[in-house]
Length: 533
Image 1 (cartoon, helix red, strand yellow):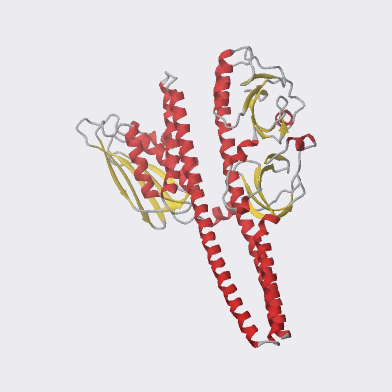
Image 2 (cartoon, rainbow, N blue to C red):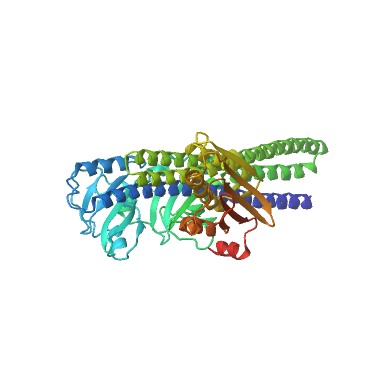
């Protein structure tokens, strides 16, 4: 009887320990997923800020001077339009070299507020930073939490021309929704590399009046999870983090440990009850064999119920994995939609210019954005994870560019011969941009000067050969003039080909021929360098 009791206690203890470990591992996985979604949201938010600052910078360069800007109603109207494109009641500021605000979207004329004592001014003037993500602060007007993203504009002599600043409200992170009980009362936050808090959801404004909290930063891996005590409320949480690519910012998601262990505690109580029943049954076994048999039947029913619960838990886990896959597809879908919106904005902006060179530059940028959008559409339409089928992508890219440049109306016949090949998104983006440039040049210049009776054919082929994926773009035009190959090997194509670890070449062979050789296996040195980075 003692052996039976010891076995019951030991088995229950092992089950409880294993269940606690699994509950914490599930919470770590959920925290990493939440941090990834928060990082994508923050990346998109800062990227939109970059687009707006680029637009303001272009307007300032056209004016050539800051004089009279504070009293210019036209520029104020532009500031309001640009700020309206940003989410969550963001504000847009232009600060002159004397540290005084000279334009803002919310006030006209702008009040001459002095920002020389603020962190953003020290970052651009004393530290000389080109761009800066500011820590969380309270707004001077409405006392709401906000954080800033700013860029320094430099004069030709290297001096400070102006600072363009956007103040974001972190309320957009409140709208992020995550399914499942583990995400209840979860915390989403952004921190800089120096540990200073940029944004948090939820965030009590009274917290910022006491000082901006500083968190322990995690060096090494750009993504991970562990346990840590919150610097805000001192609560122990399961913390997942993901670093924003290209930004000195880390997205953090925290799940309270008591929430993560709540299912395990339920199991603890159930196991304790089962152990008590087993021990009671063992004691009664010595008194009555009949009662022992009845108790055994009860235990069998309890075991069957436990098996049913485990099967239900496995079903819920499968649903969670499916939801995760859906989230990744939704991210690519939203990126594609955002690129389409950006392309439409560029097209609208281009219509305001009469200069053919300016309009062509806008059209080139639209083609590049659409080509990248096609990549994310390919990832959304397929189940290949982060890999892009180049053959499928090239077919749709040529069709898109042919329609954009009126190939059918110009009598240009398209011939495609493409072998399938899947490569990672990080290499597919530069390859897509290179081929967009080349195919666009073929439609624009490849058939100029050709004989009227000559057939106009654009052939795009791709095949595997010797560990390489070889792509060839060939037209039947008059070919390149003498010495034109050097001019066509632009710095953009050269830089993008180097980024994709590919080699390219132009030739005259009955027309202009462009060849791109893309290694199917990444070079060991390049792969090791990326892993270290």
